[in-house]
Image (cartoon, rainbow over all chains, first blue to last red; front, side, top):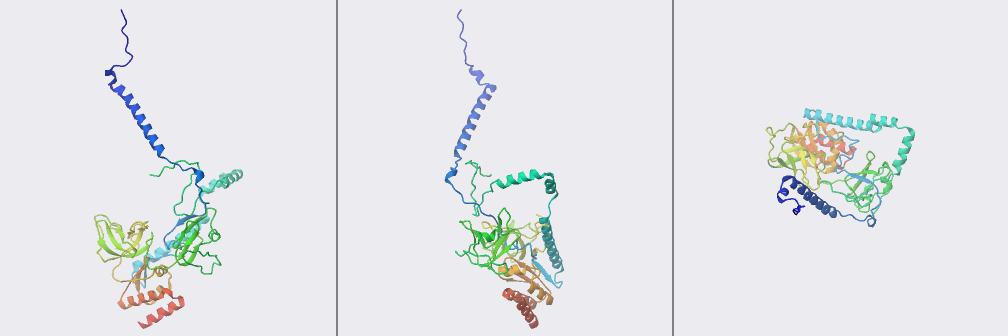
Length: 167
Length: 243
């Protein structure tokens, strides 16, 4: 008797079963994800670094639009004032505010010269040799490039990597 | 463009718009980080130099390496943290529209008062005077105000100003009046009992027992703008004697 040739393909009914479908879905999903990635990476354009030459960095500038903050370290400023007990509540709060501002100034001055406990522990923990090598390494590091233009352009020193915008 | 040479500290350095600041002068007090705080009146230009954009006296504060131009003007530009006197010009469900003398009216949240809740809202009418603090200001949006100290949540002198009289002065004089040791106010306070509030937006509110006193105080404040201390005390004396 002749042998019935075995079919090498799976039957249609088998293919419709859930466990077979899962494999298919996985494959199509992977393909779609890959396609998305490709589209996104092709949209990332990078300028060739050699053609763009940015200016030498100078100062780093902070902007302060209020006059009152400029002299805040030397003068108190009290908005509401009262004289000869016309409004005693205002007089009390005015002297209080002036006192508070003076206290803050004094504390700030003190804090500038002090050092915190953590920093002190760090300093003592480092041996002299470790300190010297660390300082040498720090000074040779390049400074963060800045210009005092209002919209500082950021050069990527890592050779033209695409920078994703922050959400 | 003229460039300025920084001379001795005691000399007044007057700048005009367009004058560049010398780099050597700016780097004096800075640490290795070259940080610079620019106050009003200075702006960096495209060629990385710092240029004055207002006319006035160049001032410098070593703390924080601050540079600014002390200038005078009458139009107020809102800046965060300043205390101002405003007039309510409109009411809506969430905000009061307050006129502070800037190019645009400012918004004061209805709940930005001490102890204000949805059930317990303060009620202000159009035309009320409010002493507020600028909580947010930038050039793109209307300024936002609040009538309380942000850190403590207490009123601290902010709120409605009842009675009294408001005069409009220049911004430079308003800043000088904020000093608790201001001469003209101390002299007036020795002779007349009164209370006042100074708004950085060039408005001063004065309240005293009689209209005569109020008028005298307002005139004294207006006159004191360009007087030195000797002339100031003479002026106050002559006004008080005439009373």
